[in-house]
Structure formats: structure tokens, C-alpha cells
Length: 502
Image 1 (cartoon, rainbow, N blue to C red):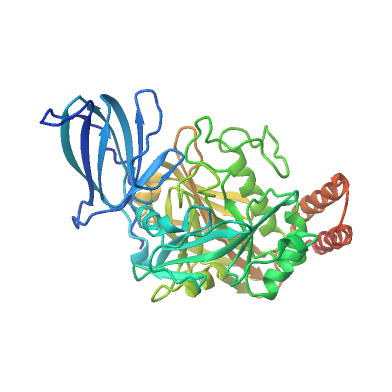
Image 2 (cartoon, rainbow, N blue to C red):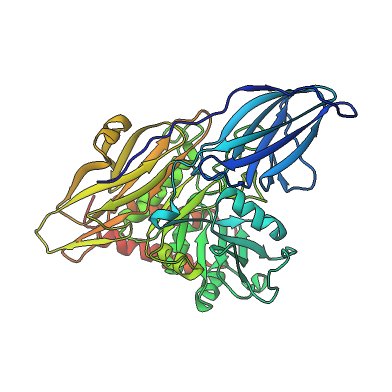
């Protein structure tokens, strides 16, 4: 039986009145140290610090982005007199500390903050990473340690300067440090009217300016053994890319999902295929729309892993806010991590932590049976969250098969209700956290069920994409890839014709 834990947000909420000691000049000095409560080892961390007016503050000589800065375990802050609110975080496996302090003139004090680890994903073979990063390369070692990330792909082309940290080999696109952290500094981005592709794991940039369409970028990426990821499930050309057979993954948690919903942090007007504002309303509407599109892909019998990226450096998110955990047997290497992604041994999250086993298997596994037989799956989940989660959901073929209130789930020791299939389909596990004004979600990659050697193909889902690609083709003022759109229409029509489910 799995160990389960529910860690409600652990908050250090006390108010510090910084004591008066000898110091010079207006304001005062506050020295901060952050350690692991159990090991007493220092922790690199991210800090959000705001004054009484709500303005985010920088700290000298450390990386700053949007509303936070990062430091390596210790920092000295010289601040004017006043009240300050702060949050200190170290990835998703430690409970953050949040509080307030008051700074007086000529004051000087220090405090050690002890962060509690409530999950150790790597110890269970789940290794963290994210694939959409535009931060400064020179800052990445510190940023990855602070966010507890082990794998990162840095967007460096087209046209982005790269200043590598000391010790990084300028002749190599893949570098490692701290024994088990890896950065690929050769990721590219191809953003056009039809959407945005991330082109990963290439040794050399593609000459995007010479490619008339993004299908050319997909073809060259495949020819050079790279990885192509759709940055948004709602990108207009997603059905076209899928029909080409050259798209490797789809971001279900992407840069539209932000840590902060304050003005200046929220996404601008949504691009791509618009969602139904009534069905997908609220602050989590765009995120639920991405999920729905992904479920339609799975309902078409397509086996494509979900991915996650924050867009940090281009958008307001911290590094690793949306992240992936990939299961790797044995020692972590960069290649093994990506092998795990391709096999679907993935969970994506910006909050809850899920480690599932279905009949003892990891996500991506295909359960098979002869035609006319049934498959009954026993499901278990190791689960932890720093935010409250009302229920654990089992999603079968795009619909909620079970919604288990979290207290009942914990009482059951991590066991989930069984799921029975009498025809092909898929199943995954979902947990959404209760946070105000935000979308905190975790889903596992799917498990697949194949009965009678045929995948489940939903007519409704195939028609959903067929209508989408027709709408896109009709809306284009010019069509350099008109022939490709015709092929995509035929691809989706073939799935409609072969559909074996509503």
C-alpha cells in the first residue's frame, strides 16, 4: 500500500520586529539564512519580498525576475523603515514560509528560516524538470538549485545571446553540474501565427528563416533526432502538427498558467483556438480548456505525453513553476529522463505531487486483452500537497470516473477505486488544489487500455479536430501550407471514419 500524506500550507506567519542594535544610516539590515529543518544544510531559495505598498523589491547582486529574487542560502537585506511581506520557497517538495516583518531605522537583526521537506520525489525515482526557459544561462545553476530542478532546456535561438556560467563547456550543448543536474542550452523556439513550437535536444539551431512553414521545422527537428513540443494545446495549428506525425508532446501546463494573477502577471488576450467562456470560465478556465483539448487527443487513440513549462524569462513565472516529474530507473542521466518522457512515465504539476501505480505499473503502460474480455485495474497513489486538495479524481476517457474526497483517500491508505474497461480507452489521475485566484493542478500521463488490438477512437473527438483544422484553413488569408491542411483534413476524416466510440 502506498504512503499518502496531505501537507496543508505550512506557513511561518509571525511578525518580526527587527531589534535595534548599532548600525548606521536610515533603515536597517536584515540577515537571512535558509536551511533544511531536518539536515540543517543551507538551501538555495526564491524570495518574494514586497513593501507596504505591495511593490516587489530586488536584492543586490542576485538574480531577479518579475517579482522575486534568488539567493544561495544566505542574504543580507538593507531596507528602509517600514513593513514588509515575504514568501520563501524551495521547489514544490518543501513547505514555503510566509510572513511579515517590520524594519526600524538603525536596526540590525538576523533570522534562520527552517524549511520542512514533506516529499522526496527523487528518492522514489521521480526527477523534476521543465522545458520552457528563457532565463540567463549564467544564472541557471543557482536557479535550478533554488527551485529543486534537475533537468532544464534553455531557449537560446533564434537570436539570443548566451553567457555560460564558469565551468560550462562552450563546445557542448549539454552540460551537467551537482552530479545530477542537466541543462541543454540548444533549445529553439518557432513562434508564428499558427502557434509556438519548442524545438529541443538539437545540437545546432535550425535556419527557421529559410523554412516557409512550421511543418518544415518539425521535419528538420525529426531528421536531426530532436524533440518537438507544442507550447500550447490551444495553438491554432495543433491539429495540423498532430496530423503530420512529427509532434512529440503537448504542454498542458504552460506559460498561460501563472503563479500570480496580479496585474502585469496575468496573460494578455488569449491566442489560439478560443474556449467557450461559459464552460471554461474563471481563473482556471484556460487551464481546463488545455486539459479538455488534451483529452480529445487521447480519445482519438493518440498516445502523446503531456508536458509542462513556465516560460520563465519571457513570462512572469518563476523557473519551474509548471514542471514535469519523470520516472527514471537507476541513475539519472539526461537521455534517460527523455526516454522516460517518450515512454509516458510523466506527471505534470504546479502544486500537488502524484506518484501513481496502476497494477504495479507506471504511467504510459499499455494494458492489453483479447476482444470480448474485460480489464479491471487496481489503482494506487502516493500523494502529497502543500495546498489543500478537496478530492482525487480518476479520469477515464475524458470523464470523471471517480472523485474521492481527500480525507477518504487518506483513510484508504492511497488505494483508489478500481476502473473497469470492456473496450479500449485510457485513464489518468488528477488533483486540483484549492487556491484563491490561481490554477494549481497535477495530472499523471495516461495509462492505455487496448482490447482487441484496436485503440479507442471517439467520433466526437475526431470531429472536434476536423472542424478545428477546417476553421483554421478558412481563416487564413494566405495558405503557404494549403496542401498540408488538405492532408490534415484527410487525417482527421480517416479517424472519423474509423471511430469505434461516440
